[in-house]
Amino acid sequence: MKLLPSALVCQQAVELMSDYLDGSLSRRARRRLEAHLVACDACTAYLEQLRVTIAASGVVTADDLAPEVLQTLSELFERFRDES
Amino acid sequence: MRLEYPRYRDEVDDAELLGRLLAGDKDAFREIVTKYHESLVRVARSYVANDASAEDVAQETWIAVLRGIERFEGRSSFKTWLFRIAVNRARTKGVKEHRVVAVDITSDRSLLARRFNEHGMWSDPPAPFTDSVDDAIVNAPIVRLVHESIARLPDAARAVVTLRDVQGLSTTEVAELLELSEANVRVILHRSRARIRSEVEASMRAGQK
Ligand SMILES: [Zn+2]
Image (cartoon, rainbow over all chains, first blue to last red; front, side):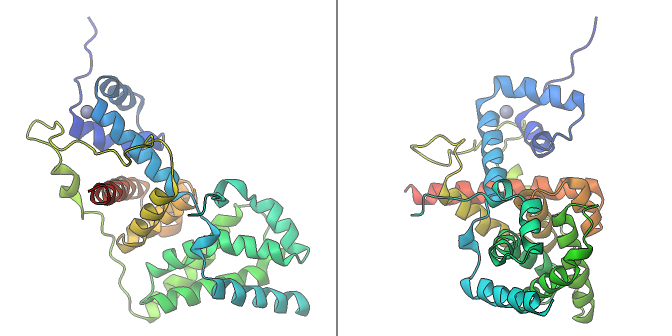
């Protein structure tokens, strides 16, 4: 008989989620986490929020940059272009 | 509220911008600057003494890019090349300023642990980010809260999260650039993402009262 890996508790599941989202968990750890997620709404919600957090980190908008900085750098670019 | 959110990282292609930049297109340069400047400042700030120095490093990086762009051979990605220039400059400047960068991976351990009981089960389960909208949707208030939270992270963590999650470098690239082990990068990412998530959750909770 093949022994099943012991079940994770929530606190252990949460520790694995960052690596899970990056695809850097071992196959065994991934299976244990996925088995836990199927049965646990709180951890599933937590994982979804981590995913949203990472997705929101990757949103870079024009609003983030001060207009003066952009102006200074644009002028710098024009000087370089005109010199070369 | 602005509804239109250009997702620079995914929608603006570096190779296309570089082609236009080499042809002297000023708008292409402005787009590259918009995409990367704040991240350059944030990463540089982890090495230097103050905000003004970090801004200087970012500006010097752009000058180096304009000087060197014709020699950029595309052997690495543009963003790896760009951040390498910035990190090298920031490091040199930080040494001159006698700044010591602490790798603060031990902080925040207890923050998440407090949410569980002695059996490792949630005693304080995650609260939804929003009342009305599906948590899976990335909306403008969440984007703002997340970026404010990243800015408040300790030095090494801010650099790691900016490179990995804001700009999408790989864990291996981040480790090489910042001279950390990949295991350290993964631990820092885990702790930082947990902290950012919990700060968003706390703001949302406070806002709903
Ligand atoms: Zn659970």
